Image (cartoon, rainbow, N blue to C red; front, side, top):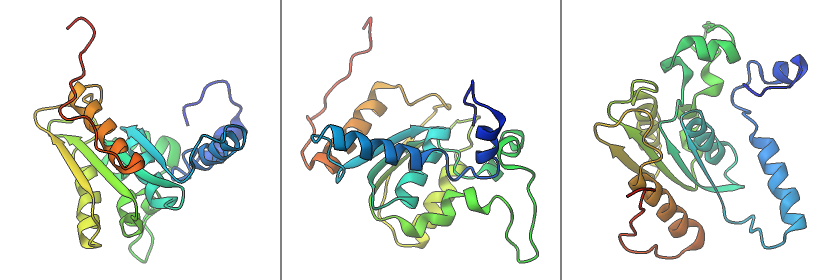
Length: 197
């Protein structure tokens, strides 16, 4: 999806399969790197993503719980039925409803996998996001609650879509990985200074 300098066969392999989103390739690459660099600990793998990456990082911990132990997902378009239809249809095809009440986009909706959560998940969204509506994350939250799953949530008030590079969000992301991958206490109130500050 969106990868330049690839042929049509490459793009066709992903068409209609947004759930794949390259995660099997990432897992294979990390396993290969761990064979070469034994200091890589495959028992403590985390993933971060924002926007489409927020979809992918949540998908990673739900679809591959034996590999990904921690995920931080911000402003994820977790269900393309609630996102810009032209984007979803470009990669997934037209929405088609089935007689049983399901549809062709069910396979790419993270909330449908909420019951699979076994690792640590931090979800974030901005209350004024006009790119990926907060409801995309709220649908995942609703299903996590329905399945009695523990998760963490950071709501960024009065923030639009581009909040992932804010120092507070970066610190909370780092702290989450330090706590849940290293099993250590992160530095108290560590402050990130933006260049020029």
